Length: 248
Image 1 (tube, helix red, strand yellow):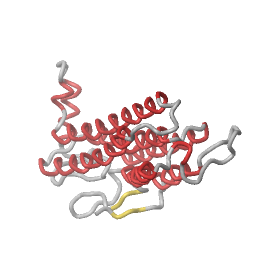
Image 2 (cartoon, rainbow, N blue to C red):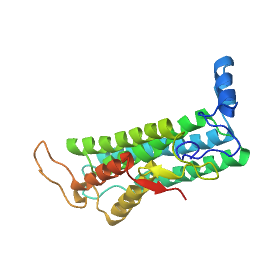
Image 3 (tube, helix red, strand yellow):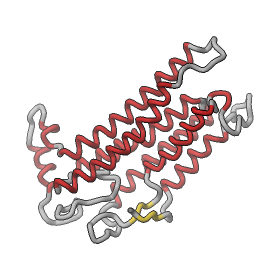
Image 4 (cartoon, helix red, strand yellow):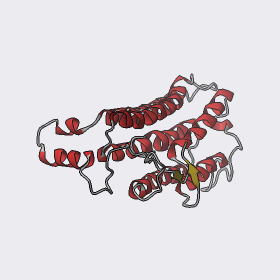
C-alpha cells in the first residue's frame, strides 16, 4: 500500500507540500537522467515490492488462462480438469495483498516514499485486485455477454476508485501519524472477499454449469449468471463517496 493505502511517511513531504521532497528529487532524476536504466535507479525499495504485487496479479491471470485452456482440451470429458491452475490463480491474489501491505511498511521504515510509488501501487492494485479476480470469474464459468459486461463494470469501478484516490489523497483528513484517517469507498483489495467466495465454490464443484443461483434468461441475448451481480455490488461500494471506512 505504498500509494493506494493513503499512507504518507512521517517526515517526508507529499506532492501537495511546498518543501523539497523525495517526490521532487525523483522527478528531477526521471527527467534529467537519460541513461538506459535511469528508470530502475529512480525506484525505491518499496517500489520494487509494489512490483511484486503486480507480478502476483499477472501470474494469477496467466493461471486463469491456463485453466481455460484445460477446459477447452477437456471438452469431450464429463469430468472437470484438475483445479491446480485455478487454485493458483486464487492463491496469488492474497499473496499480492501481502506485498501491498509490505510496500507501505518498507516506505515508512526507510522514510522514503515516491510519486512513482503511488502510481505503481494503484496500477498494481488494479491488476491484482481488479483484473485478476475478474479473470478467475471468467474461467470458472461467468462467460455470457452480460456476465462480461458485469465483470467489466467491476474492473472499471476499481480503476475509477484508484484514480479518485490519486487525485484526492492530499486532501483526505490525516491522523496524527500522517496517514489518511479513512478509506473513501471500500478499498479495492476487499475484492479478496470475492476471491475467497470463488475458492469455496471451486472446492464444492460449484463452477461452470453448476454456478450458484443458476442462469437467468437462458438462451436469450440477456442470459447471465446472477452470481455475477456480486461483482456489480462490490464495484458500487468501491466508488461510493459516502462510505468512509476508518483505517486500522
